[in-house]
Length: 245
Ligand code: FES
Image (tube, rainbow, N blue to C red; front, side, top):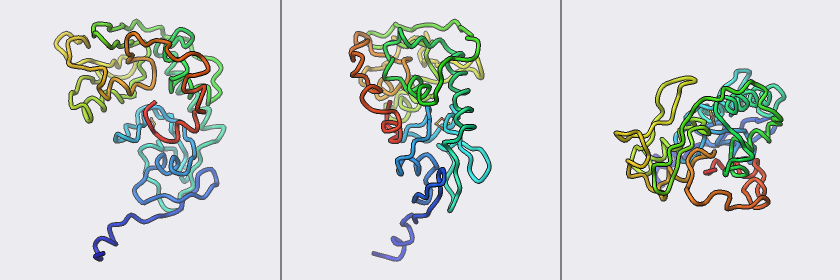
C-alpha cells in the first residue's frame, strides 16, 4: 500500500453523546455517528441515501453548549453532545406538535397509521395532544395519477420525494414551492397534476414518503393492526438506521 493510500484512510476519533463515549470516523455527522453507535436521535427529514437537508430540526442537539442539527453538523474530536435531555425533547415535541397543527393529520383515519414516521416520532417524544390550535389549512388531494395519489394535507415538506426523484429517479417530478406556512409540494407538469408526469409507482420517490402524503392506490390498510412497522419494530431500532420509512 502506498503512503498516499494510508493518509487517505479517514481517522477514527472519540466523542461523547449523553456522556457515552463513542467512536466516529472523521467527516461523519453527529447523526451518522449516533446511528453507528445505535444511539437514537429523533429525526424526520434525514435519510442516509441523501445529502442532509436540515429542514425539520427535530434532530436538534447541543454540541459543546451550542444547539445544532445533528444531521448536518460534523462531529469534532472529543465533542460533548447532549441529545436525550428534558429540554431538547421538549423542543422536539413542540416542533412535532407544530407539524401536526400546520397540516391536517388525522391518524385514526390515515392509511399510513402505524407506518408513519411523524406519528411514531410523536409517540416517542411523549406527545399526547397537538397542544396548538389547528390551522385546518385547505389542501388538495391529487388523485390524477392512475397508480398513486398525493394527499397534500399530510405533507411535512421533508423533501425526501424531491431529492429521490431528482437524484435517484432522474425525473425531477417534485419541488417545494413558496415559503413558510405557504410552502407546498409542487409537481413539475404543465397542469401541476401528478397524472400529467411520467411518475411511476416503482420510482424511488414513490416509496420514500415517511408520512401518508404520497400513497399507492389500492393498497390502503393492507397491514392490519399488529403487523404495521411500528407494531413490529420499535422506532428507536428502526430509526437509528436512517433507512427509508
Ligand atoms: Fe436533521 Fe431534519 S433537520 S433530520
